[in-house]
Every structure is written in structure tokens, then in C-alpha cells.
Amino acid sequence: MGSRSNGDGPSTSESLLLITTEDRRQRRSNNSSSPATPVVVFSTVVAVSGSYVFGSAVGFSSPAQTGIMDDLSMSLEEYSVFGSILTIGAMVGAVMSGKIADQLGRRRTMGLSEMFCLLGWLAILYSKVSWLLDVGRLLIGYGIGVLSYVVPVYIAEITPQNLRGAFTTVNQLMICIGVSVMWLIGTFIPWRTLALIGIIPCILQILGLLFIPESPRWLAKIGLWKECESALQQLRGENADISEEAAEIRDYTETLDQLSESRVFDLFQPEYAKSLIIGVGLMVLQQFGGVNAIAFYANSIFISAGFSSSIGSIAMVIVQVPFTLLGVLLMDVSGRRPLLMVSAAGTCLGCFLTGISFLLQDLQESKGVSPILALVGVLVFTGSFSLGMGGIPWVIMSEIFPINIKGSAGSLVTVVNWFGSWVVSYAFNFLMKFSTEGTFFMFSSICCVTVLFVAKLVPETKGRTLEEIQASMNPFIVN
Image (cartoon, rainbow, N blue to C red):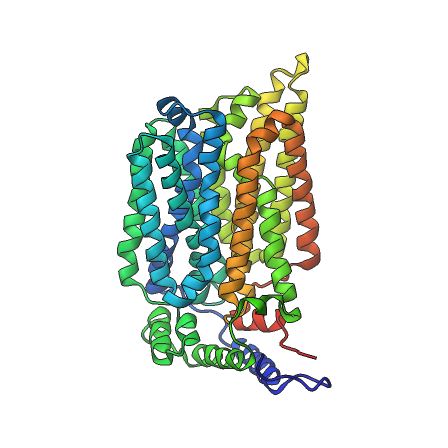
């Protein structure tokens, strides 16, 4: 660490940080809104093309399951490996994501990620044996593991504070659309054609990255102040006054440079504990609430419940996209915390209803009721998750970590997310064999814990600059 306190009060560097943050807060009251310029909108669209690739990869395994198992003579256990190996690759990508994004910049990191995804889809497209299929899935996993970190971080760093929540949540909207498109068209076309379609957004993002600016905050972090101001001016508009925002970024970045080096061990210092607990906790609860079990194996859930898998998948699409869009619209109106709590409560109810449907399945008089209740439960879960739990943890992750530890912290949080995804996606088929209703009751209990976690620990970040959020959550006090 750099400047330290003497034990009787905050250090000089800390005082500077808190004074500048408070000063900016007072001056922002007269100019709290910034428009969504064409450059910000276009840059966000290009960035979230990576989110669409993410969604396509997640959504591919469910509609492709029957076709792949028949064509390549794969067992259920082998297909479980194929379905879950995506998350192994994503964990590797997540471990490296923060470091790569800090070294190469946000734009080049997105481009590198898409090259891995492109190679992965090609391997799946031309695979004749199961091991090549797994290699392709692993490569895609690596790419989306990096993208899952860098896309929301890039969007949060380029958007003005009054639009940051909604724009960052577009990341989840595009994941949702990617999943939904795969579910929808995968019902009617062969799995190799589906893999070919997965290639298109990879190419589109690679081309789009040539025309968008780098993150001003990353440029400031590496000391390229002129380039930082140029990128900020491009994002805010030719005639916009960027002096205050540029000064705030500069003051905060310079103060962080005085306070610490960017090292992995910095994450475990007491001053970052709150941010780390919130970031890691949200990702653990998001995954162990069962989302990827339902996303990866929706067809088999509906078949087990005695319901049409094609109708169920279409119904999920009809629910998922509008609720995700509603979440985007409400993000900067209702705030993060209320939306998270409503969303988590809804996922709790959805899993509970699905568990009840399987519990009733053996009763003769409930034969007609059980499949409908399973559909209702899955749809309630899907709509509720799309409303907030899908996107908001990533928004908060992109907001709460200071730039000096954002790479390491973001990597850790993303790894935790993908590890949870792997555990759930790999174990789900075996859990369903052991106790179908018990599996969903377990997910429901975890969703209930999520409501309490958000209520007790998660702060409201709506309408605050990144620098203000980070300064309030991470007091740089060393006793």
C-alpha cells in the first residue's frame, strides 16, 4: 500500500479521495443527466453482440440434445459432459479475463474472445466424434468466460451514470435473446445448422469492434490521459462538456495509484471485504438457484413432467424476452435492490411450484394437473430470473470494484459464477434421478436465501458515479 493513516484518522490519500468524491457529488446535482449518444448506443450494441454469443452457447445444448445423442451415439452421461464442459472452459477464461482485459484493453479482449468462440462453433459444426464436439464446446466456453466479465465492465465504463444500469442490463437481454433464439429455431432445424447460425454473431462483433472507442477508464488506468479524454469526448458527443467527468476519473485514478499496486492479494485486504462478499455472494446465489439447470436441460424437464418440450420451450421464449426487457426499463427507475428482491422471490416461487408438480406426479388424480403446474413453475422462474437475477449481479459486479483491483476481483467473481454453473449443469441430471421434487425444493430454498442476502448486504447503486460507489464501499483506511 502507498499512503497510510497514523491510526488517528484517514490518510492524506484517503482524504483526497473522499473530498474529491464529495465535491463531485455536490456539483453533479445540477447536471445529473447525460444523453445516450449514437456512439454510446453503437458501442453498447457491438459489446452485447458478445452477450448474444454467450446466450447462443448456453441455449444450444437443450434443443440439440436429441439430435447429437442420436447422430453420435452418445449416452446421457457423455452428453452431460458435453453440456457442462462449456462451464469448464468458461472458468479458465474467467480466471484470465481480468488480467487480459487490463493488459490488452476492453476492445481487444472482446475480439480475442470471439476468435475462440468462432473456432469452437466450427469444431462443433464439423465434428464426427464426441471428443471434437467437447473440444469445440470447451473453446466456446473459454471465449464466453472472458466475455462474461469484459462486456458488462466495458459498458459500465463508457455509459453516463443515469443510463449505466439500463445499458449494462442490455448484456442480460442479449444473453436471453441468444438463448431464446436457439431454443426457438432449434426446435425446427438440425443441430449442425444451429451451430452454423452460432457463428454469425461472432463475426459481427469482430467487425464492429473496429469502429468503437476504448474504455476511457482503462485508458486512464494505464496513463493515456489524452486518449482517455478523446474517447470520453467521442462517447459524450462533440459539443459535450467532459471536463468534470474527466477530472473525476483522473483524480480517482491517480489516488488509487498512490494507494496500492494492482495485485491479487489486494483482494483479501479488509477494505475490500464488503465488495468481495457482495460480488461473490450474488454469483453463488444466482447459480445455485438453478438457472443453468433449467437453461441447459429445459427439454428434459418438460419431458419428465409429461409436457411437450417444444411447446414448453416456445412458452419460455415468450416469457423470457419481455421480462428481460422490462428489467432493463426498470433498472434505473426502481433501483437495483428492489428489483433483485422481487426477482429472487419470484424464482423461489417458480422452483417451489415445479417441485410440487413432480411431488404430485405419482398421484392418480393429479395426472392432468402436474404437467401444467410444472410449466407454470418453470415460466414463473424464467420470467422472474429474467427480470433481475439474470442481469443485476453483473451490473453490480461492474460497479463495486475500484479500477486498481477490478481485473483480479472481476476474474474471481466470474470464476465463482462459472464454477457454480458447472456444478449445477453437471449434477442436475443425476439430482433429477435421485429426487426430482427434492432438486427443485433445494433450488427454491437457495432463492429464498437470496432475498435475505440482498436485503441485508447489497447496496443501492442507482444514480451514482462509479467513483462514488467504489469510494463509499471500499474505504482506504489502514490502521
